[in-house]
Length: 565
Image (cartoon, rainbow, N blue to C red):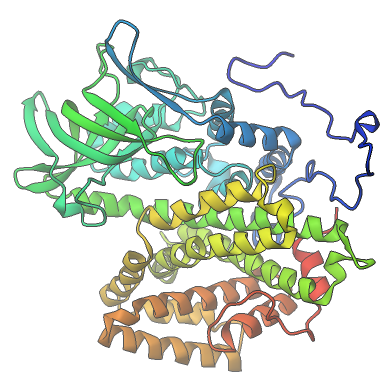
């Protein structure tokens, strides 16, 4: 069967070496074979263990299929092409009319189609009764698997998922837009919303003078009658510029409000959203981010005037979780590359993985990746339980910014360490690691950088005096002496951060490591939790790859977290 118009041909070139291309001067040996054909779900015992009680056939089968595809040679080639041929902006057509069109490579559309069909944008809100009580956990697993294949295309899907929460502040908009937003059909055509098979959302909050300070925006909204507003101003970062509508902030009557700005109006005309250029980004090159001017763009109000920052905050809880889950996926992908290389590379007569120093580095990487995966699933389960359990709701409020703080800041250094395990081969653009390394920092910068997240942790603890007790009860549940000491340390740091706000980052880091260790205790063999606690928490809340003690079974840790193929 031939490929669709925006799908790549699945018949990829054979990756086996061709004897006819042998070099005249030497034979090629001692190189790791291609890392493809591995089912990312079935090869992840931490993920499977964390989801064990949820893995009925209806939930497991789609994860097995997703894991098979994202680990395939086809998925690797699609991801490579999507970044190698970045999007291009065409502001005008050949006759001089504005079209504000961003053209993506077909590989990007293939990625989007795959993830939309898997419901990464809609799974939290559709009415599938089989996912009741586990929607967040199952979706998190899908997001984590997709991030291992290609992470940049997930941004608009995350915005769309979180955007449904924002639209709940405007019931009339929900009735008009929800069916399209929940559709599993990917449709990138520039058409009025009513004519689309599926809809996606982008966002534009940041301006040149206003990043995290949302109240400093200068874009202005004026009433245009019939429930519409006209927006005039600019957006410094407009995500997913080919989305069907954008959630933006604008000053309405002197206070910031949230608005939904369609890209194409009901009569088929383009809205007055003028794309100025695409951002020349360090990473996440497969997906476009634009600078835009709104020159009287028509928009719908989302909530009351002055409530804009509050509406955005509702979205941030979900988008921050997605950023953390994506970072965990990048870490898992980097770990797999490093371990695969070390198992096949021979140095001084022994496999690299059997060299004592390298083995300890790999064991530390494995522990950190496992803890990241465990923390993401633990947090997703808390999201599922929060409506009925106040302790779980408190866990969500505190640990969501904590998880994003730790994982998105850890991922770049983690990937760099994995790259070093491969040496020059890992630094080459023909390896996946440089792309992972470039994509990781954006996750820390967007949706609130480290300082903002640390302050949000303090704010959450201040607003709910019982929240810290709920989180510490979870952290200390499976450990006696060590858990008690950890809880004392965190309570002491909390008091210090309340007295000196400059200590907020220290508190966020301690909560992250303790929460990740507790999640690892919960979902993995005790030996992994013991080694993580000793390497990350007991020596003074530190981190350094290669510091895991040799009395732990380092080879057993690596082989458990990344089972040999």
